Length: 471
Image (tube, rainbow, N blue to C red):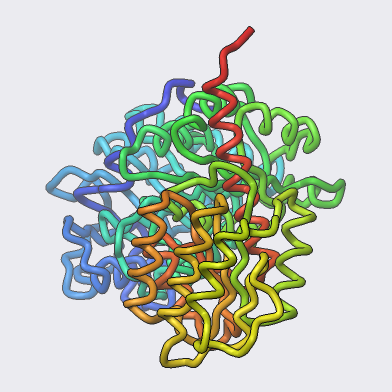
């Protein structure tokens, strides 16, 4: 049960001025050791208080027997102790006036009646001092604004704040979103692994990130909602202002059962949730990969004004795959106007071999490597006059600073999305990362790119529908 349906101020959770690690250890292979080490290595600027009854010093920091022995205030307590000891420590946190607690410990309501009783005892102890709880059975937070990482404390991440927030009801989903998202070029305003939602719920984090000026996109992995009506109500208020992307687990009978045993949540009626989500402007994903693709797509600062797509390709198979994907997604690949084709023809004369098509897709056949960035950029600039968005499959140069800057300039002048797919993504991971960071969404395959582009188009249609007069 949550303390209240009103959303709390979560600033001190994501930007804590002091952190107590309960169960701190000198051993970095243990979670309590990893948490302390991670804060030190990542340059956390607040005060770190290791809590260990047997140690007087951990990693050159003074260690305390209990939170009650700490001289200063504590914004956040991170608990890395067995479940049986959590209630007592929580009572001490309440007495101390700790604001937030992240309970990593497992063995609560996800295990049945005995675990539910432990969870209830923990909540009752927290209520004595209004300690707000993340978890239990969770991985905690990543907050680049505060240089805090308890989700993958063994990995060094670039602590560069950005506009994507992620809320995950799974440690696995949260870990992968953190690491793969960073590899893809996403920068985060905050990531939270929520576990059992014993106190703070999905709805609280939707409200917080929805009203956070730094957050531009909110992504979720959800298994069960404890306040479904509130979630949809808050989503309806926020979705006109920023995209909300949801991957809902438990769509099958077996998935729903797995969700119940995983986080103690009821997965709920999947079809009903999907229908209600569409009404509220929520964007649905069907996998973690698609969730990440959609977050990448919304790194574009512009939405398409229609569904006409210009395809610029240097691979015949890529042209077919992209055209087929557009047809399935309801996007048009219409022939370019004759005057635009003529401009392309004049520009490309003597620069590339004779092209089989300049209609759309535009097939460059082969562009000399030394001139390829200039050729691609100029062709996109010409094509953008006649379409609502551009997708290009290009080889070997999307890491080129001049090329990416030129694409940014074309995008900003036309106010139309430009999406890139490398001809060989294995060799262009760094280029994909750089492109996404600069607001040019990059994808490994044409299908992924087109699905993401279709989502941008639907988002534009949704926002347009909100502006229509209601009869």
